[in-house]
Length: 186
Image (cartoon, rainbow, N blue to C red):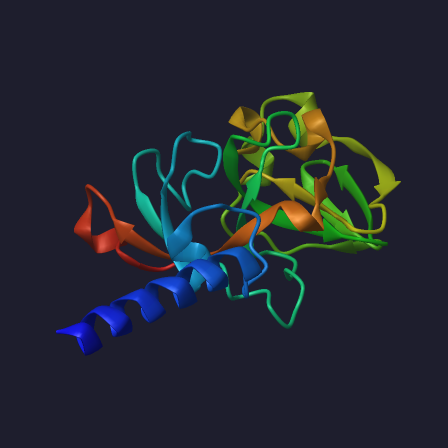
């Protein structure tokens, strides 16, 4: 019995140490993300529709960016810059050093149009979704957009996401009212 107790104490001490070391470098205090490299989040808004729907539960890999930066098009979970206690899920539209502009609803990164098959650009109603003057993303930051551009409070309204505030990459829809939606996220 003493050997069992010693093992439990050692394992507990190891987990606590790993939690504070934060080996996956995630911006969350969620122990699942810090210790196991994955966690879940519930989609709280319709800003990512039709890709992610309000109420769906998504699987987030906090280990995805251990050895690489988020790629253009990745859907990430991050701490909202205006209230770091809140998390958002949105798509990476540009990275540090990239120049981004929106013309006639089409996103251009470094003067190249982005293929966004999840977006119906001609159907965008609001000017803020159809036009954005060119800017350059500062070092150490990302620029994100919601897939539901007319109904997304994203980087167009509050600016850039610091790299250090990225929690992880959305990889799967874990739970949905429509079982056909469960699976990998693109």
